[in-house]
Length: 445
Image (cartoon, rainbow, N blue to C red; front, side):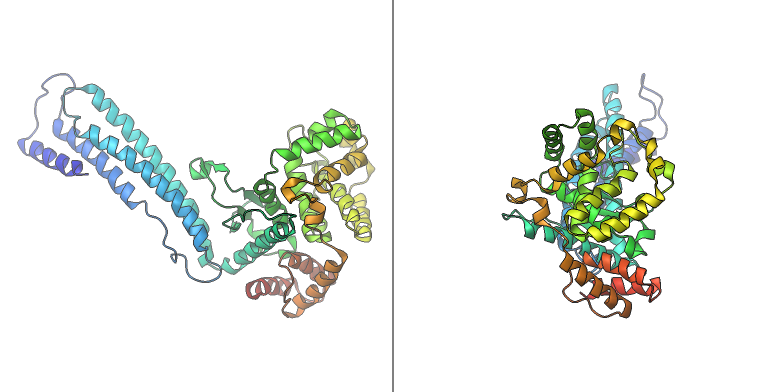
């Protein structure tokens, strides 16, 4: 690491002598060349040294701040990035100290290594900035709301892992929520490589929430949906589920062409059905709010879409809702959906996709929810998690408490989404009161 200092001394001596005539092709002003090499290695060294990890308490010490596990996971990524920078920096130093010699290949190597260092520096800084922005949100006015989303996401995870037929290793760190502009929520799975992280693996589930959803908690049915994507991945079902759907369609005598469509839709279908199992009717109502757009857009079919055609998503979940014992709610939702999207609206969907659609829906639900799997410890997803009629009674009571600000006690955090929707429907208090009490309840529960 003494090379930069050596280059400084050489550059200073050369400058003191004044300009030199070229000694031959490529010799030029050696002082300027040495100083160029000096700046190159100094910048690389200082950047590698400055790429610091985050301190455990850097973003505060309150309950909304990143947990030690989250900070440690990110710091591991930063240390790996810094180690890569150090390797390239040493290569750069070794070449920079010799560029004033007659070998033009060394000068070309210097430029290539400089470019490589610059690229790695940009990737590392992008990684550092991404998590700095995420963690810094926990110091501002959204901190308690994001902590509330964390708790709902964690409750969904706990419900599934405690419902498994056999114990599985505990996934950690837990999901982490953050705000980002955009129309809809999204998630980044644990272990998936992200371009914004320099193609490095994301160390924990990230749940992205647009601000307009955050301030309207009755619209947060998306949280169970996004968490379900991570559950499908953590449980090892990402590659298995498409095959299971395909086999179910073969067994049911349904066309392979239709099976291929539902296999392509498997991730979003799984997340929808798991969301309904986690919070019941509230999920279907929230789904209607999201996919209920213009008739043209809601019925627009695409051969490449990973989401089921929006007009199909609601009947899919209504079928499961009936299986869960909520026929009255399902009938009410269906009547509203049919009024919004009468039979003529469905004509935009290809006839072969619509053919025997109820049979297709029943087969998909059977494959995803009603089939025992070793990943669930020999149970069905329908048995691992299920919102029941007794839970609906608890949610109704919680809605009344949200209106007055009373504690909801031991109520699972995910049920508060339904409670907020019921309180809004009752119309006894302003929406602002429901939202305020919703997050206050999550903060103290």
